[in-house]
Amino acid sequence: MGGGGGDTFTVDDALLTLGFGKYQYFVLAYAALAWISEAMEMMLLSFIGPVVKRMWRLSAKEQSLITSVVFIGMLVGAYSWGVIADKYGRRKGFLMTALVTTAAGFMSSFSPNYATLLVLRCVVGIGLGGGPVLCSWLLEFIPPPNRGTWMVVFQAFWTVGAVFEASIAWAVMPTLGWRWLLAFSSIPSFGLLIFYLCTPESPRYLCLNGKIKEAMTILDRIAKVNGTKVPSGTLVSDDDVVASDQDSTPTKRHKQGALTTILKLLSRELIRPTLLLWVVFFGNSFSYYGLVLLTIELNAGRSACAGHKVKAEETEDVNYKDVFITTFAEFPGLIIVALTVDRVGRRPSMAVLFFICCVLIFPLVFQQSEMVTTGLLFGSRICITATFTTLFIYAPKIYPTAVRSTGFGAASSMGRIGGMVCPYVAVALVQGCHETAAIGMFEVIIFLSGVSILLIPIETKGRELSDNVKLKCQSV
Image (cartoon, rainbow, N blue to C red):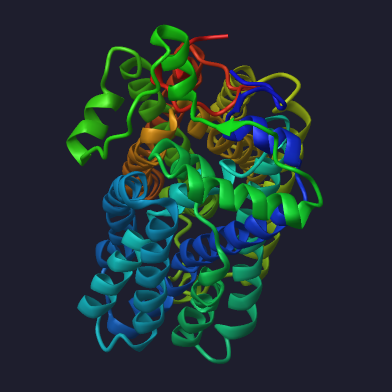
């Protein structure tokens, strides 16, 4: 691979020379706004459900479906937007996601009935499924040595969005109602559309698709804004470097279809990390959203099963203060990630945190006091937040540029399935007085996630992004 001053250089060589500067701060700010928007759209589900249930006299299953349809939409979107971004470009990918999320999110505040709300929230989920596209786009602008640190910073904006949504709900819901909460929550998505024209295409994507001139234009712009210089020589992709090493003939770029992209994910080089990554994404999402639900359901469910039933009217309203405080459990998880991701490594740190989470949850198999239950769930959420954040740093660098968005999107789709399944365990089983079975299922899924991450033969700490499949699948 070319060094900074040789006859040829890659995008990563250029980014190393250009450094992390003002240009990357702008890219990070745009991606952060998208991440805040997604967190807000997800968090509001826990606030509007009880109110809509009471207003439209919904059953518990109908209330749950309001959340489930969002995950169904995200399942579709996570894969679809990845394919679009890999085929037509990162910018076009996240433009479409922003348009869909903004329009459906705002229109849902005017929903006249339950069916309309379901359809619009499902469409919002399709838009939110494009989150991995923004993650891949951001990653492709950051110099290799800084990727771990800045991806932690990027993930922190999810927590910022969650806390912000809880704050808005606390202020808006008791006075203005759920429709205003939906409208206010769509504002960050409007911001994405406003600033879209200022966003650049990924130079790595352009380079891979043979658009060297356009890629160089963006690299020159980065150099100008950062006050640095682009390396001398000819810009090439990793594929060209490999081809030159093998037969001294640079390879030509070909547009690849969706089927070709999928087959690459299931190729001999990528099938093992792909399937194991799907297990980890499923387990992580199942655990993250499930623990949030368990925090609400476990004490209430055990009280009801013990014969201490609470009147339904008294449990309809959300305790906004408690939700606001509980959300801060994610900040210690982010600190753990910042301290371990570039020191210990992605895979071992995730595995350890999964196993610690298993230890923390296990005592809940037995009856515990409310304080102990809350403390154990609080600690478990710290661990799962840390694994969730590390996973989003780890996963994109497994795949080569040609299938990065698709691979990451497909894995995220498995996570959405985990999100759809978890309410049936964390809510239905607990309310049905099967708390031990529910906790046991969490134990199994979290443990399998820890084992699966260890079995993936790739550690991405310190690794450069690659355009070549074989380079990407060498373990280090």
